[in-house]
Length: 492
Image 1: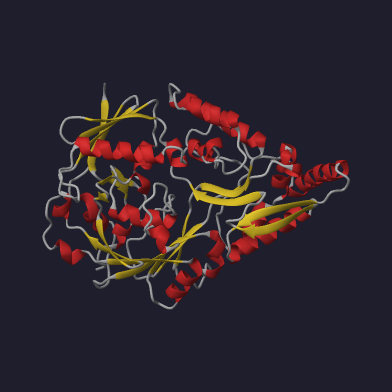
Image 2 (image 1 turned 135 degrees about the vertical axis):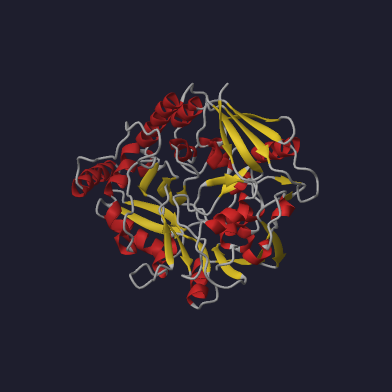
């Protein structure tokens, strides 16, 4: 069977990152903050928060990882091949050892990957990896991953921080962790310690990082006071505190990511028991107007479950209510609400929504509250951790395929209302004979979820970071991925 070969130089690691940038500045420790808590940052999974993902990806390699631009790069594997039918990926490991000194072999990597896949079962990421039918060790340092059907996004998934591989509790990464209380000190690992050729004067070109985790408000304050040079992991709820105006001098860096940003409906009682009434809520919200106060250009609103423009999108599911103006949508929604109230003795419609704290969340709530009031629905806000009729979800996509979006609503997750019919179509897609057949089944699944009206889409998530102008190695990208190793090179 014919194969396509992908090969990378052994000394890629930190060296490629240096060649990608024009470095200017002095050597020294770079002080950074990731938004979150220390508990989240040091969490060992299996599913990690954004803060945990940031640290894990720096200190634990998977078969592959991400470079500074968000592209897939070598990790434990320095090369790989894909069979023409797309159902077999074969990885060759680089020379080297695990942190415990044992040899990096095909068998040890196979065992680590199988263990990781078992731990991820029943999670959204586990559903994403469901096409993996077997992991085999071959001669020497070679591992084969077999699939039940073609999976063009496999490398993107294997690069996720949760797919970092460990042996005896430790993994091998570009940076080594020295923890001191709530501080993560990250020291670049010399190439020869990772099984790569030694590089003369390598130590002169890298620096240590000091990473801490704080809530967004404190992180922004420390950046404004000049105490840190980088803040990672910003979300919409605190975007108003980060200056996005013309005087910000580029310190606010936005990532144009895809994903889910909207309201997941949890309750199927009373008013929310009727799909057409849940649809009325979605019809009432003016999505573009909702984001205007954030001063962000190019934001993409959508009424779809799956973000528009995904690879393989058949176009069978378009934007909803496209022939109606916003005012016409509200008129129709108000009629439905009024009919329900009349049939229930004038009972007022009062719904609760769980949202995070922050000035950005305040703006969103105020806008949605006014939109729903216009159709006769009262919206009450609760804390993000509270039980509510609806909950705001804000997740960036792990890879560019409809299956990621659909897997977030799998009924076994029990996070909100769902569609068993949609889940069935997604399961059928796992064994589809080709990508076209799989795409057709995923389009059917989206149609089922859309008809069920279990989710009110708003648009694309907003992701931002604060980066001092003197810092190099940070590149906005469509995945919102910012490897710490790219920031560990000394600016020159």
